[in-house]
Image 1 (cartoon, rainbow, N blue to C red):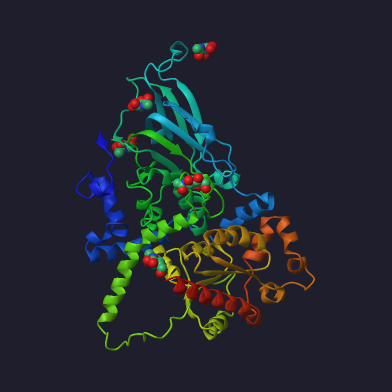
Image 2: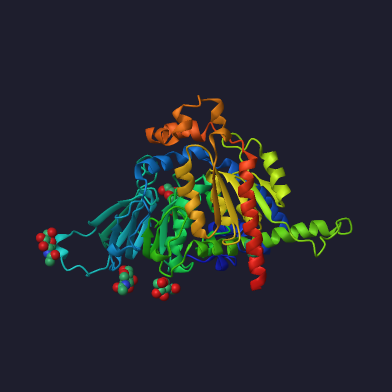
Amino acid sequence: MVQHQRYSQLKNGGDEEAATLVFVWTNRGYYRRRRPKILSFLLLSLLSCGFILAPHFFSFSSALSHLYFFGVQNDGLSGDLDVNAPLCSSISNGSVCCDRSHFRSDICFMKGDIRTHSPTSSVFLYSPKNSDDNVSSTVDGDELQHEKIKPYTRKWETSIMATIDELNLISKRRNSDVDHSCDVIHDVPAVIFSTGGYTGNVYHEFNDGIIPLYITSQQFNTEVVFVILEYHDWWVMKYADILPHLSSYPPIDFNGDNRTHCFTEAITGLRIHDELTVDPILMKNNESIVDFRNLLDRAYRPRITGLIRKAQEKTSGCALATPKRMHNQPKKPKLVILSRKGSRAITNQNILVKAAEEIGFEVHVLRPEPTTELAKIYMELNSSDAMIGVHGAAMTHFLFMRPRYSVFIQVIPLGTDWAAETYYGEPARKLGLKYIGYKISRRESSLVDEYDKDDPVLTDPSSLNQKGWEYTKKIYLERQTVKLDLTRFRKRLLRAYDYITRIHLQSQHLA
Ligand SMILES: *[C@@H]1O[C@H](CO)[C@@H](O)[C@H](O)[C@H]1NC(C)=O
Ligand SMILES: *[C@@H]1O[C@H](CO)[C@@H](O)[C@H](O)[C@H]1NC(C)=O
Ligand SMILES: *[C@@H]1O[C@H](CO)[C@@H](O)[C@H](O)[C@H]1NC(C)=O
Ligand SMILES: *[C@@H]1O[C@H](CO)[C@@H](O)[C@H](O)[C@H]1NC(C)=O
Ligand SMILES: *[C@@H]1O[C@H](CO)[C@@H](O)[C@H](O)[C@H]1NC(C)=O
């Protein structure tokens, strides 16, 4: 029987398996600096391979199918209104309570003698001895209660839920002869969830996973163990900077680890509030999406500090050759273009870059790949003043921009108005970004070359969206590119530029 240890304790020992985990973890996470540099480098390269090998990187469009479906079916839905889980607020020792009242997710609570049993996909809760006064009615070892749950936050979407592992939560009378004994004892609660489903698409990773994980586990102040169904090493590595800020303990691969883990408290399933957001009204300590973003900033700081130092070391060798920026030369506002290739690309991006530079922006073009380290994207966006991108999963990175100071311009292709506003526009405003939605005109869509000018595809996209997801996907998401009308788009660039200059002046006056 062993005690589950936090990372810091494991650094000085622990069993071999745990040590391996920590080795990987620490080299990307919090304690990275204690490791030799070469090792980190090797691990980083390995990491990239890990991403490439990751089994499922859904294309954005296929992963969005359900979103549109959802949109058509549930227009106007505004997230869960229920505060935490009033149905289970006074859960007693030895009981399982499931709150299934929410539209987006189920969540079950257990308290007492909790033991995992992965061979039967079960978590058992043994009722305390002699606590039940109706002993005669139940034989030793009988199930008192049996709940089934799929701990994933897209409950309404039957097609993807069918792929999620189901967990049995079973409360039983204690029978000392039969009971499986504890292999690992935990003295902090468990949060049990799945990283299956649409995990592999960055929108889903934040919307369905990381943010709900924050919402559900924040209350424990990192004193919580994550037990993961459909566990992927690449996921743990990709989020290795963030996870230690949510849990001080290495996560458990539920199916890959058949030891019996024992807890006294467990939450199965994650709470979710709305698209890419945290609703303070539903949080114990009023945390908002800005608090979540502050956590990201703390999480990426060590890695980014290291990256900057490395870059400085590189350039310091030729310091004489690179003249320093003049002190009185004002810094240009930085604009990041999140670039796509293929569908929903901006076909005249070079002209966009030129126009933005003429206005006075310093322009960076960024094309995030699934293998791009999130800390690097964070570094790029946290230091930028504006971001432009065509509607798609990569817009999720608006979470990396600085609230109040930055402008997010989303280019909205034909037929994507609802999704662009729901998944990114409104959440970006909630974060406190200046949001500008740029609905393209028909002339700016590549679809004008394919359809007659009176075709409903061009004149009435919402009628096509209503026909079903297949239409939206095939026509508007997979077959459309954008050629920006720069006379029209320039106005947004100017608006963004003015906003940034004004905000900078304001903050200078305050300082
Ligand atoms: C709840 O049950 C656990 C396990 O049986 C026990 O250790 C703990 O003392 C109990 N707590 C209370 C408040 O009864
Ligand atoms: C005990 O269990 C029996 C059979 O299930 C039931 O009829 C009876 O009402 C229970 N008594 C109490 C006190 O719960
Ligand atoms: C898991 O189960 C397998 C097969 O029953 C067994 O060989 C193995 O030792 C178990 N692993 C652990 C860590 O208990
Ligand atoms: C959360 O907000 C409520 C209402 O605005 C306030 O009464 C409460 O003190 C706040 N709690 C914290 C921890 O800030
Ligand atoms: C993000 O930008 C802010 C403001 O410039 C800065 O204070 C903070 O340290 C940056 N965060 C990271 C992780 O670099």
